[in-house]
Length: 506
Image 1 (cartoon, one colour):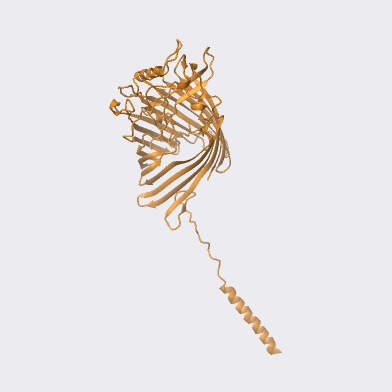
Image 2 (cartoon, rainbow, N blue to C red):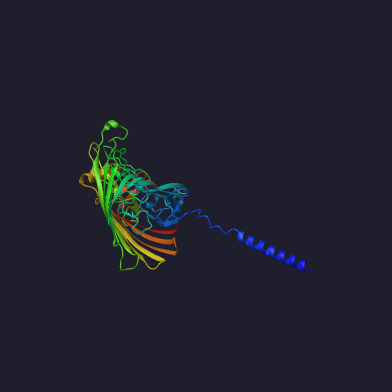
């Protein structure tokens, strides 16, 4: 019996010993493998590409826009079917956009090597321009560049641009009064850092992106509608004028890049930047289809811009003021950044007139058949006051003023062309003057209920101050669209638009 008890106790002790040994041999839980290694060198959102020393950040945004009585992204009703203000226009314009960006950075003995690219996928359910120009799907490329040892190569913001481009506090992509290069242009540039927030950049830009030139190419000055280069209608080298005041494209092929640069100071109080640009105005032939007809000599135009941001305002944390002032000769696009040709219709109280009309033509220069360039002058100012009511609500009051001026000889050429192309009866008080001013004033309010999700509403008023007087019979053919041959009063025009936007950044 004692032997049996001993065997049982011995077996139990053996089992306990074996169990203890097995428990001691159990593997300790392994530390989780870090498949994605965070890169903290360049801010939030970067991580190392596995197996490399390169950091990458993926980002972008999704945006839904609707504009009432305007074009996409709150373009005022200042030309085209929108400018006619009748039933051929869309009463609203809508766009949905998905933007995707890739940012990579690698530390080297020469400094950081950076690549950046952004692609936009757009669906336009309507554009504001009515039937025939609605329902498009597009793929756009904004910025695509490489940075190395102070140099930038590719499609990037011009060295001439201010940090806020054409957006001191607005949603609208059509705030005039200065340069706007937010989607970039092909260029090569170099930036030098001098310390204490002082830097300087010099660059060579594509000279024709978004630019047209109108030529006065007919001895009697026959003008036609301006054409479009790139994504927007740009300034022209000027010739004869149609009923809506637009000019014919007369730019020759690119011969020289725009030479641009800036000096910039960034401090805790804000920012100051002084920019300059040189642009070659280069025309084609007096008769576009005949290279033996001669051509005007090329001229260099240019522009300057001063930009100022003031922070730490007593009105509240994060509030600031942004403003820039521009002046250009032969480089109008750096003042009226989207460079539209204005043609607006409205009501009239004048007896015998069907409607009123106001127009303004953006040109870099005017030239007559056998003559030389008369460069156009433009100047403008724009800015915004930005205020945060609390962490969730903010508002901005913004505005701009721009002017385009023709010298005496350019005015004579323009008006001769306008008279030749529009021989209708004029009233005794008719006068021709292609100078014009444009003004904008807007208010935007934003609500950000959660981080990176913003709802906003923007109301904007646009005013065209044109300098023609009296009235004239204009032909339906010259006016285009649905306007009849009738008498039209020359009159200043106004437009009001409303934009609502939802945007999620990621």
